Length: 303
Image (tube, rainbow, N blue to C red; front, side, top):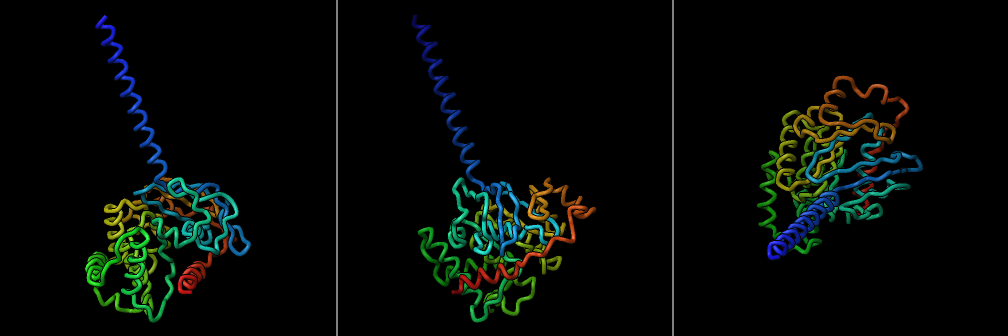
């Protein structure tokens, strides 16, 4: 009798253990699934023209994604839409961050949620010193999280660390925001801001354009180190294989006429480098007005 009771007790314990394990596994799975940025059947219009047509993608934390395709394919439009640009009108589908619908969430709120966009053509803002701008942005983020704002000395130490990582000296931040900057300097200023904010999702719109070979390697190295430190996701629009050789994407998506037409691993970049986009590229695709998008965002922030 005692043996029978003992067996029942052991069986009960085993069942409880299995149940607990399954519950933990379920929670882990849900947590993993929720820690993503999901785009579901996204349809986007700008100035009455449909630029994205039922795009469905999933971006996981800690991974690197490359968006490639001919000019006007919708790559930059996708990044601006993810960031909440008011000129990109979502007419179908939705955007989910950690399972929460952010389709109608404003750009500044998305920034507080950990999203960051590096412009393809950063706008010049005369009279606003870069260091002051960066400290204001960093402290605004900290205060939104209930953290204490950084004092001038504390911020200076942090800024110096990030400047060193990007191969820049302190005089760089004493200049007006992007005024008189070369193309490469503008891109480094964007990545400097990213490094200070440490977002969860970094949208990089042709960050490699304007950078020379050394600059490309320096910026890619800084991004890789930041990703390793914070676990952020990098989503980059680029036309060039060299930058992706440094960043090593986990997944590559090819867009054409507002649709995802191909996908694969890093080997897809090599194929595109050899063969181009082939028949997927057509002369009927119009170039997107990325500089106008960037200027309208900055203009709205200044107002």
